[in-house]
Every structure is written in structure tokens, then in C-alpha cells.
Image 1 (cartoon, rainbow, N blue to C red):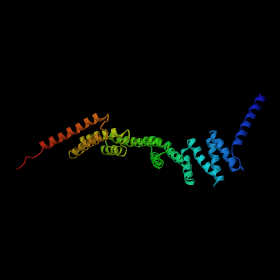
Image 2 (cartoon, rainbow, N blue to C red; image 1 turned 90 degrees about the vertical axis):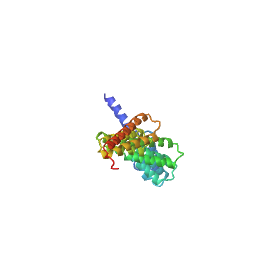
Image 3 (cartoon, rainbow, N blue to C red; image 1 turned 90 degrees about the horizontal axis):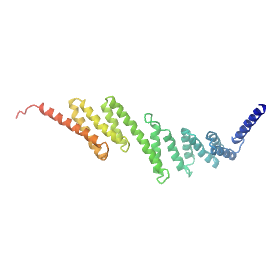
Image 4 (cartoon, rainbow, N blue to C red; image 1 turned 180 degrees about the vertical axis):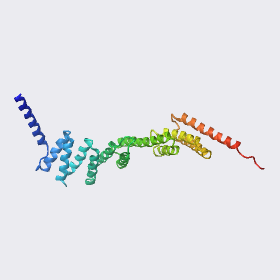
Length: 276
């Protein structure tokens, strides 16, 4: 037992010694500190590497060591999923070294930092909008980049999320019989995100909502709202002529036209005879 304890203690001391050897010590020159940080990075010890690169970036200010350390500081945070810190360090790298050949990749990674922070559609979408903005800027600036296709796919995905958030808001107001608010949100989906997965259904909901809204309106407002339903049906045909939801749209349109005809019949039967 005594020998086992001694052996375990020796292993612990050896492990600690090896680890201490890898870490930066006071008095290490900048090149040694950089090499140790890079060894930690390559070993996947990103938190320790980040600490080392942060120190090197300040120790060797104005040197290539500082430039590379700043780059790998952002990379260390990115690889450890610390996207807020990574974004900050990438922005600092771009500010300090605007002509560095790695800038293209850094700008893409910066957009990815916000993409990775984009939350579920029900939550605040500030990071989603920021990611879209950065991906769009990237594609405009680097149209021949190897990341352009991936960037465009992320834009579509994030815009779809924004459309979903607005669409669900419309459904919420519809369930609670706030028809005017519902039509406003469905209209935003159609106008702002016509390419999204939710645009076709939003138009169907828009037509249906206007019909229900008219049904429950005072007589003076009914014709206007049935006509809004028909106008949105026409928009549906223009935007989605081959849609699988076309049959449903046609049924709704026929319902609106029938109800308008009913309003005309009521108006005619209630009109006063001519005095001529």
C-alpha cells in the first residue's frame, strides 16, 4: 500500500511538472511564450491557449508575435464556443491589422459568432439581425470567397427565423381575435420575407383573417374587408401561382365573393324607391 501511494504521488508530481512546463512563466521571452501558447492551442487546450495569446499580444506589441497572438486569441475563444469573446477579439484584430491576408476568414468567423448566438425564434433576435448584416456585408465584399455559398445559406436560415417570429405573432393575435393586429403581422411576413417558408401560409392566413374580420365587423366596414381578402388572393396568385395551397386560397376567395354578393342583395332590398 505504501509503495502504491508513493507511485501515485510520483505520477501526480510528474503530471504537474509537465503541465507547469507548458504554461507561460514570468520572465519567458515573447517567442517562448508564443510557442507555448501555440502548443496549448494545437493540443486543444483553448482556455489555457487564450490566456497565453492574450499575454503575448500585450508583451510583443508591434511585432509579428503580437499580430499572430491576436489572431489566435480570437480562434481560441471561437473553438471553445466563447462567441462573445471571440467576436470582440476578431474585431480587435481587424482594427489593428486591416491589411492582414487572414482578414477575409476573420470577417466570416465574426459573422459566425453572431450566427452561433442566434436564439430560438421566440426570443430577442438582435444577434440574428447582426449575423444577417455581417453575412451580407461579407458576400458583397468577397463575392468570390469560398465561404459565399455557406454565408448565403445562413442568411436564408436566419431570415426564415425572423419570418417565423413575425408569423407566430400574427397567429397569436388571430387566436385572441385581434384581427387588425393579426393582418399587420401577416402582411409583414409577406412583404419583408416573401422567400421564407412562412410567406405562402401567411397569405392564406391573411385572406382568411380578413374574411373573419369582415364577418364580425359593423356593416359599414364589411365590404372593405372582404375586398381586402380578395386583394390578398390576387397577390397570392401573383407570388405563388404553383403553390400547393392554391386550392385553399381559391375556396377562401369564392367565400369572400359570395359574401360581397350577399351584401349587395341586402343593400338592394333595403334601398328606397326612386322619386322619378
